[in-house]
Image (cartoon, rainbow, N blue to C red; front, side, top):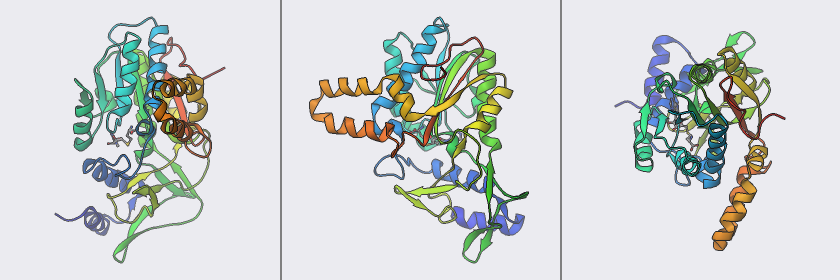
Length: 326
Ligand code: SAH
């Protein structure tokens, strides 16, 4: 079977240069369908894979909202792009202690990752699209999901495309790049529509900027190193910064409420991650170094603490999640 690189070159020869959006969609569909990219042996490591504390804080936040909303019956835990299922497992453990029970409802397109999730989460249910989630209140989480969805790039009014260049690929135009992402806007709008109709809250964590700004943020990562996004299509992880201002607009237009994004470090500290770290250390003193290291990676400015943001979406009438607002 021809490689994705061969198929893309063939497609460009017959259709002409393809948009960055089409390129990113094709590359990531292939990439995620054919591997588990997470962890030390893979290409990148995410917050839930760094420490159980991350998922525990997300779970505590969702459980607290559910309680303050009056424990509405029928509410379910849902997650978008759940990777290995680690965040769901850690969050649901904490939520269970607060009296919340639910199967994990997972929106995941990759068969390889669905299998990994199934091994981790008993009774998990899968859905192809956000729109397929059951019509009930959601306690929804998503970590590093939006950054994998395709975006468009523009130079002036011209859409940036990808053309064949000898044996490789090249951009059709360079200059000051602007980005937008109908796919991400549509994903958060779908969450907003669901919450506005059926109730619930969503906590969305990703790297990106709180305010829209120009710049080329498309990046490829392979084996924990940055790489050229036009090399090895479908064999490395393609992501780009999330524009939380644009996402917030799409949520509001869909009829849900949005809290201004806060940094991951501030949010986790506000939720009590430092106290959780101390209690983990107290019960496993030999793990002190690992726990402190994880806390540093998740919270500090020079690691994930500042670049990663947390955005909350909620149904009108539902309480604002902890760690946001005044
Ligand atoms: N949330 C996990 C994994 C992040 S990697 C973690 O934090 O560890 C991105 C995840 O999104 C993977 O599970 C990938 O398969 C999934 N994904 C990517 N594009 C998707 C799409 N269009 N629809 C549903 N899931 C998608």
